Amino acid sequence: MTTVAATRKTNVLATVVVPYLSRREHLDKSLPAWLSQTRKPEIVVVDFSRELFLPEEVRVVPCSGMWNINRARNVGARTASGELLIFACADTLPNPDFVETISNSWDQADAWVCETVARSIPHDPSVDGFVVVKRWANSRIRGFSEGMMENPHGWGYDAADYLARLRKMLSSCGGVVF
Image (cartoon, rainbow, N blue to C red; front, side, top):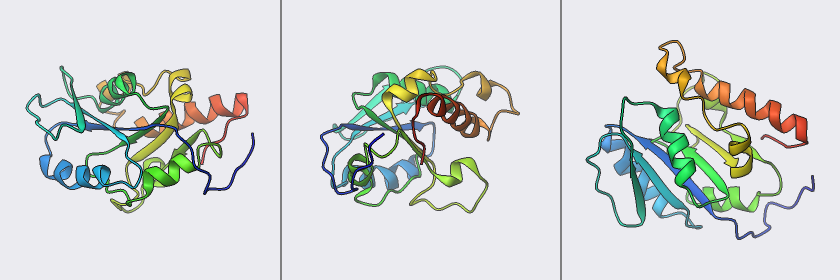
């Protein structure tokens, strides 16, 4: 794998996937941060509430059934146009150049995982609650484990499971996780 400078410009499209159930106040804070990025991503909100009306630059994908954050992530990934998938929580507040920085680092890694996703450390909305992965890598591991969220003991381990499967797959084919 070739490492390139972080300032390299790329035309890769990034898609932000945001699962949503009922905390509109979180979405009202995070969407402006995603919409004002220096590099505009596609934004997909997977809506379990079925009552969400958002600006036209945000695509709302309805999802039915019992709330399952992993199903929402997988539905969002399947409907995304981007080659770079950013799985974010409704309360994630990215820096204004987050998408540009990640996009410019396209060749440096196949996945970027926020430490707070994998560990129990204090919540920081500017860096918390996101996994960034190339579409091919997410497809290869078949996305997030939806069955894990149907078991009450699976909550909290969904990102750790995803990360473990992702690392295993990437290590077998020479990929890199940051």
